[in-house]
Image (cartoon, rainbow, N blue to C red; front, side):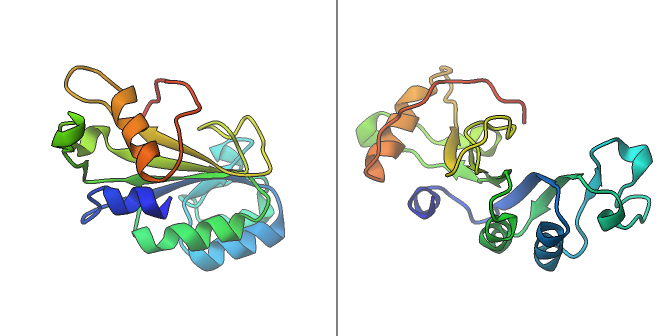
Length: 168
């Protein structure tokens, strides 16, 4: 992930966090990283939320959707999740142009990286014992694969997934 972030323009970047927290221990660790955590009860907002000033420990399991955070909180959040599933999305400033590969610069609107923690999919519905990197990109022509293949080659990997539409 760090190698991909080194390629991207992240000067004004930020991270977004998503997770379902089920245990008091994981909640305590996540709240250490994000003391003012944005959350609501998995049963529904009417059963508790940060907006209402409720205690999240009384409302487990909770949904975390905490966006627009500083980049340096990503690794502590991932560590805090332990074996629970979650996602960290890096909102990048841009993917740079790579003229020798025929790739134009891609604006912020289409420049993201998501690490799904202990999950294969963006919505944490497919549990895993490891993590999955999702590259969000699109150029003017709608091409999504050329940049992904190029990025993978830059970090010693290869594209092994599939193209999916994501709603961001």
